[in-house]
Length: 244
Ligand SMILES: [Zn+2]
Ligand SMILES: [Zn+2]
Image (cartoon, rainbow, N blue to C red; front, side, top):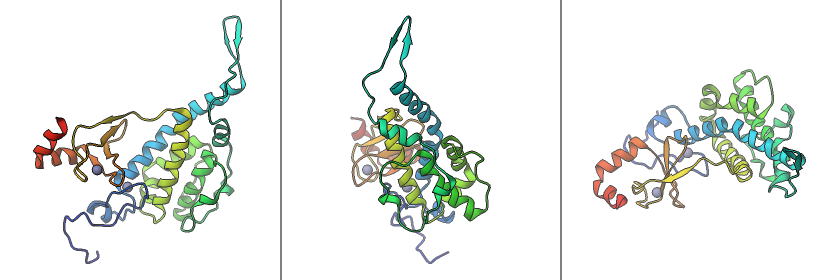
């Protein structure tokens, strides 16, 4: 261990994801994590919802090219759905050799156009299999790659790598692209309690997420329900203000 002061000060190292403003907690640091636990959980939620998103993406591609038969009439969908090129790109194939990448080097910001889902996942799966000498998934479908990456062993190990923040940010970009096409975003609801970090009333809870997030720009803190319950006990007046 280092000689870091053993205090409850929140001024520890920040989570490696640029989209997260959480400070790593003691138990996360002890595990050697560079990503905070909420970010790791969020990645797992995204990977688990990918198969459902793929069903919708596939359906939207088919609606583009085939007519739907209703009774004796064939109805052709003439209005192209938004993001058609994106759908085709997202569903495109990717090869294992596309995954050669230096995760310690530059992010792939310089790439033009949307990579296929498989093409986004392969480099991360590949770096883990190569560094750990683990067997890759037998199929390179987005579903198989996502399931492999979401398993506890690979994802927990990845969360301790210096590139974990890049992985989280890249997967977030991918999910935003997918959500913008499928419109299948997890539902969000406001929480009537002020944010323990910035005091704003911008906390929201999201389906399938155990973490409640502050949506105020510059804060974006994440809390478990237990942490919020504790904050409410410490500052009951703040909770009443939030419920008012
Ligand atoms: Zn984080
Ligand atoms: Zn906040």
